[in-house]
Length: 342
Image 1 (cartoon, one colour):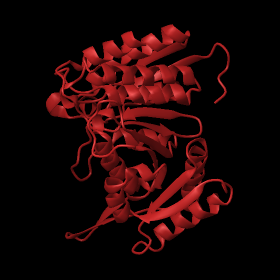
Image 2 (image 1 turned 90 degrees about the vertical axis):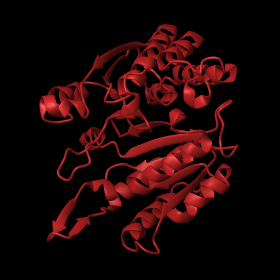
Image 3 (image 1 turned 135 degrees about the vertical axis):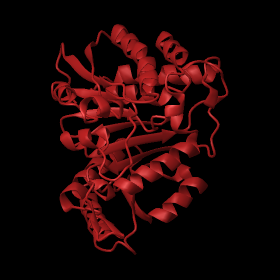
Image 4 (image 1 turned 180 degrees about the horizontal axis):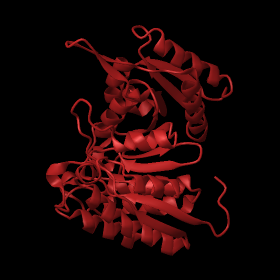
């Protein structure tokens, strides 16, 4: 991205539900430290969204928040609770993804210093198609005892996400693995795979291979170091990214970016963990690494690197860690310490 000189960034900040406000509040000092260090002009504008809005506003994404998002450059989102009852609200995250066509969910996974993990040498990115598949949200009942959910796969979305993943692979180790279940889902995954292979013709320098999703689930555990960019449709990508995060050390260090052609939203992979809400206890590193991805998307790579380096220094020092990493520090203390290291 080409950044205009003197650009003022308008960022919508949505704290969300459960531990969302805790991890967002821990990330704000980090953002302020980076902006001060690098002279970045940024307006952080708070908005309300999530489960707690339903009782007050009748929706988890109020109209005033939608307007805030439309007048911002990107969004920084805390985790939000989604009701699960039939006929209840679609998740706020899905609404935002569809509103701005945030078709690429980018979930990097790698080993971090002094973070216990199942395997070493992990450095991969899962690219998840974000707009269709099993998360299309099209469900209906046939009578009283049969529920039907439609898995939508289109050539347009498959080609778009394939090109995105190949461009990412070109910036990394030039290896892309596409995940599917074409032996069972012959038409839908057949279409997905055909568009991936067609896109590969424009990226001859990228090594391409495919894997059934069940095989990928086992190989991620056995030899994750073999993979670079993993491309998957919506449901497969969601499941595999959680698995990969646990292999490398847990969801507490797993960031993500939802990226479209003109907008992006950054959020931790983990959920809202209501039982820890307001306790200032949980690990904010996934949220803070999502901030790193935000700066990189803005084209402010030095700022992003400063966040990443500060997180790694904190982990190497091992003094200010939350309970999941063997420490007893508060969520806010971790955020403040990372800010001070910047």
